[in-house]
Length: 318
Image 1 (cartoon, rainbow, N blue to C red):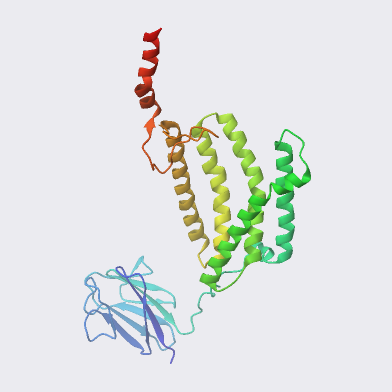
Image 2 (cartoon, one colour):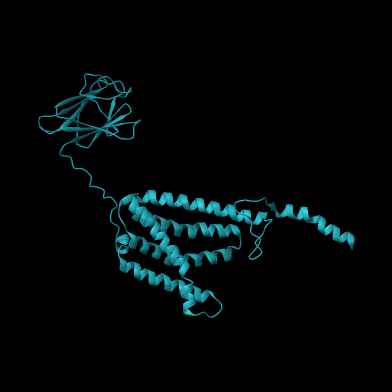
């Protein structure tokens, strides 16, 4: 005899419960003499009766419940009604889904489902090709942005720091992947990082023109948040795809939150830069404020007010 499987979902619990019964008549309710007990105060003592008919079909009948029953959430159960495997009842605040043993299950969700883009990235040849491309692109950018003529050795040397950053990023996420998935995917992480930095060149060009046309710090912060933030979300999302089992929705969500926190922090620092005057400025570059407030600073307006006596004394002497 084929068993009947009941999936019971309570409104106050996150995960359903499963029960297997092989009877032709199954009584459902809150009373202890039922075959299937439901711990829901809105369910009657004897609420439903599920039967396996002689011809093999399933039927359900309301047993005179006070709050009634719904088939598939919409059809009120009155008298005997036939239903199919996979249909569900709503009684009180509880949902009961019914299956036969032969009911087909959903396809298995693979851990880290294959991604064609990431699969192509996961080999040393892709990493080498993208490494050559990113270095060449950075050298061209430096060549056209520097007003004086420079040698190719100098251009190549200017890529040392960006390449070191890329290697450190790929190494960090490879280590995270080894901790989480027990899988080393260094070439894939390296390829994704190189590809993202190739995309960074047009992204930073767009930001430069945007800031130039906007002409305000608000425009600059907007450009950085939209363009650079979008680029960082892509880089972080793909790195997380290789290092964790998170879904795309989770990866994008956490990446966006992380980038927004960076954008807010950057806005606070920029605001501090123009409102504070450092008592110990760095004369080599410009009057930069102390970001972490290790020593007391003053606003520019307060500094002018406090130092006004110097100019008054000079006028008096004249």
